[in-house]
Amino acid sequence: MADPGKLRGIFTPNMVPLDAQGKINEPELRRYVDWLIDRGVHGLYPNGSTSEFTRFTPEERRRIVAIMADQTAGRVPILAGAAEANVRETLAACEYYHSLGCRAVAIVAPYYYKLSPDNVYAYFQEIGRNTPIDVTLYNIPMFASPIDVPTIQRLSEECERIIGIKDSSGDVAQMIRMIEAVRPNRPEFSFLTGWDVVLMPMLLVGCDGGTNASSGVVPEVTRRLYDLTIAGQLAEARRIQADLIEFFDPTLYSADFPEGFRVAVQMRGFRMGVGRQPLSERHRTILRDLEKTLGAWLRKQGLDVASPPAPLPTLDPEQIRAIVESVVAELQHRGAV
Image (cartoon, rainbow, N blue to C red; front, side, top):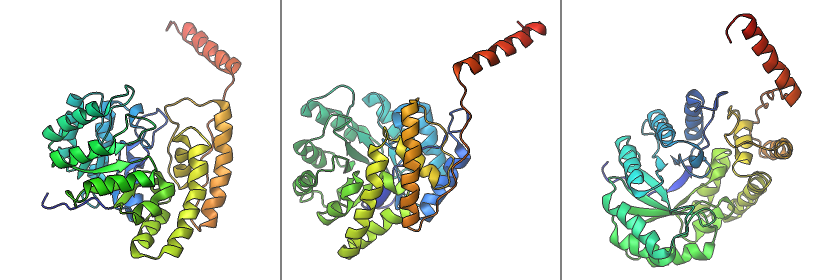
C-alpha cells in the first residue's frame, strides 16, 4: 500500500453478532459493517475489548477479520486486534491480517501475567522487529500490563513498524506526556483514545482520533463530535460530548462490560444473539432496565430505535427434566436407546 498515511478519525471496535447456536452470524456481521461505514466511521477495529476477543478462538478471530475485510472491500481501513497468547502466535496473526489487506494491527500488552516495563518493552520490540504489518500499541491498564511513557518513547524510536498507540486509560495528562515524548521524533505517530467520555479533550490536546465503543452504537454522534472538535466548533462539540457521556456511563457501568453495548447495538436494529458469558437473572433484569434508559436517550437524539426481538422462552428445571424424560421415553419406545 503506497503511503497509507497516519491513522486518523473514529475507528469502531465492533461487537460480533452471534446466531442461535452461538456461532458468528456472518450475514448480520456484514450488514453491520455496511451500516457503520454508511454512517461515517473512518475505520473498523475488530478483535478489541468491545469485540470480546478473548471469548473467540484464534480461528474465529481470524474469520471475523476475514469477513470484515471482504465486506469492507477497501472502503475504510481496518485496524485489527492481533493479540494472541504469545509472540509467535501474535506474529502469525500479524502475517494473516497483512495478507487480508488490513491497514495495521493493534496489540495489547501481555495480560493475565503482570510484567515489568522492561519485559513489556522486550515483548513489543520482538514484534516490532518481525511484523510484516504496521502495529499500534494498545494500552489498557485495567486489563493488561501498562505501557509506560519511557517504553512508548523507546519503541517509537527503535521500531519503524510501530506507528501509533491506542490508550484506554482515559488519563488526559498521560496522553499529553506521551505526545510530548514521542511526536518530536515521530510526527507521523498516531495517538488514539479508547475512552469515549474524554474524546473531545483528548482531540484538543493532540490526539488523532479514537477507538470508541459508542461509535458501534451511535456512529452518527461520535463522528459528529470528532468533526466539530477538529473544526474548532467547541461549544457545539462540548454539548455533544455531554450527550455522549449520558449514553456511555449507563451502558458501560450498569452491566458487566460489554453486555450493555450488546443491548445497545441490538436496539439499533441488529440481532446480536446471546453472548458466550452466562448471565445471572439479576443481570438480565439490569439489561432490561437499561433498554428503557437507552431507548429514551436514543429518541431524545432523534435516532431510530428498533423494536427488541421477542425474548427466548425460559424454562424452569422441572420443565427441562420433564422434556428430557419424554424424549428419552420416546427414543426407548422406538428402540433407539
